[in-house]
Image 1 (cartoon, rainbow, N blue to C red):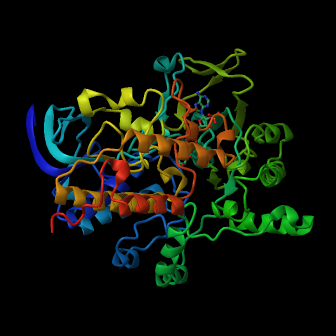
Image 2: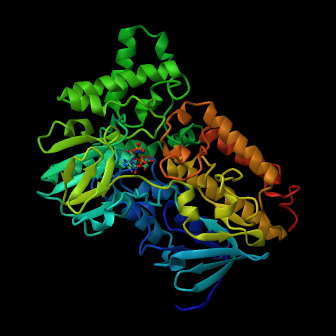
Image 3: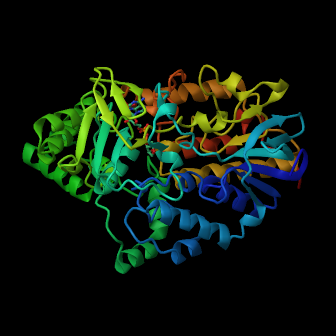
Length: 541
Ligand code: NA7
């Protein structure tokens, strides 16, 4: 297609991952015409792109999925406790087919601009095609804008380099080769053990030592799946009432009141259970510094127990942030990997990377690490990055980039003052990245769908008021300050991983259940924070 008219629909949704697919299904079922624009040539969003070795979800498969259709829950068969990337992508492909979603998705369309003109939105893609809609829904993901560090010399590297979030579809042959990994967040911690198995030599460049809990991944038996499937209604109820959208009941045991042996037994049991359930076993771990210090020490001890070389163990031991204040990774044999002959660890906090040379990595001390393959597991420009990767222009032509120069402002993470009839699924200020993602996504989309029904009925425009935005910004800051989360100075939750990015605590940390109640109150009151004065849902009747 060249310049010109790409048609008109009620809604344009940008992105065909978990959010965009559900938005399409939900809005279409409410009678809206919808066009989804997706830059990839397939569905999956984050799970389309993240194909690095070991890519796997940290949420467990039986609840890292949609809940909107009990039949879908019953017919899909997960194979492992944690779903791998291929399996999640397969699930989303199944969803796209099952609900006949593809007919309203345009693949290979990279949006370059979206502009409000007083009546609706014009969305222009890089090939010059423009499409119009009344309402614009961004479903662009939170962790989809790759953060490649600006290290001098990268362009001259003679080997191949890849960011984990843009891994080549044909894979990368690392067998027998000298591989370097920069980054030890959730992604690096998943990829390192798998790369180490195949590489000739693996060098890990670690800036911040991290905590990690064993995932305890395993195949799911028929019995386990049958039990889960017969219990889904209860599982979903627990998720809806929970802090993180997980179906775990948080412990009510005050761990510091326990005698040492019982406390140790509790930790050991949680460690054996593994995964994100570990955190749920320790009450107040994210709010009580003494509890956290105790838990952090238990985890440091586990590293010392696992890693044979004391100097390597010491370098791997996290000391500069409390446990779980950066997103806590879960792993399969991560610390054990450092006992392999073909793996070495380089502390780039002590001796930072100075440059990439044609041969590999050079540190400030002058030490050289020759490499054939360099892997950046360096994370994402989280939450705001995907929304600012194209030009969104609202009232009076003001761009979102200008509006968010000092950091993002939203009402409930779902809308932005100055940008009428724009809805941001999992936007900054929503609890999504601290929540089991599909749970947050379904809530956001359902809420937006209800609001759109009202707007269709009344002809009104919805736009957050500056007052509502300011109130929500205070609430997001207050919720973060009630936890230990802001103590991790280099966390992506704070935007601190991207040079020049405003330091604002990005997600809402007050808990999923409380957030959902706040959204429900906003709707019940007639959406005052979106500039709608009274409840006019019945006007059209
Ligand atoms: P993260 O969690 O942002 O981790 C990125 C890692 O890369 C982290 O260890 C960083 O160290 C490191 N990093 C980033 N830039 C550099 C440079 N320039 N030099 C050395 N090291 C660097 O991203 P992930 O992809 O692992 O995980 C993202 C989320 O995906 C995860 O939280 C889950 O929600 C799923 P730092 O800690 O900044 O010192």
